[in-house]
Image 1 (cartoon, rainbow, N blue to C red):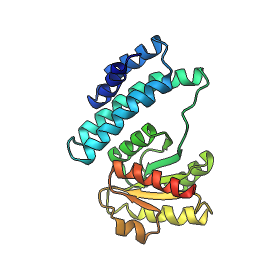
Image 2: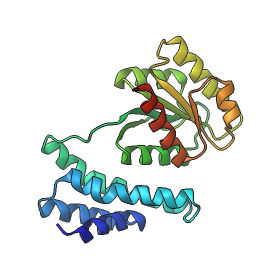
Image 3: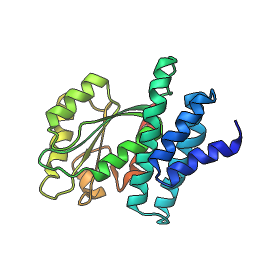
Image 4: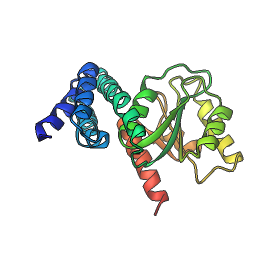
Length: 218
């Protein structure tokens, strides 16, 4: 299929156009394209590009959210076909995400999940108001490499500290890395509670997870 078709896939993500992304994903399958090829040569480069633009402040949070929705819409078409064909994306790692207990904010956490999934990570999003015990149960169940806890309130940041302590007590560290993020969270806080890293925003969180797992494998 012509290179400009992959450009169209990429552009549907950049435009934040879920309906267009779905239409193109279906067309790719109708023309016999491998789902992974559509993902890796079309949709993922779109997410990479919008991520770069966001980092340079050339686009804004709503643009990033819309791009993520387009990517998710395309994946809903392509993933069932991958399973039917017995094809799996090469996983870079498993990540459990959630917003800590007492906190119901999730836009930033959702973005991190979308970008991690686009970059080849298997993401288990527990949603909001998640207790440390629930994080740990899921991490054990899926053999997670990373647990990411978001907090958007100064009053709920203590939940991140409790999570680090309970992951330690459960004997999961150092194999399981704990990262934290959220509007009131700082690098100093992350270091102070003994987490493995701090994601300032969704883009840096993805880079952080990659770096942690790369260093763990060397």
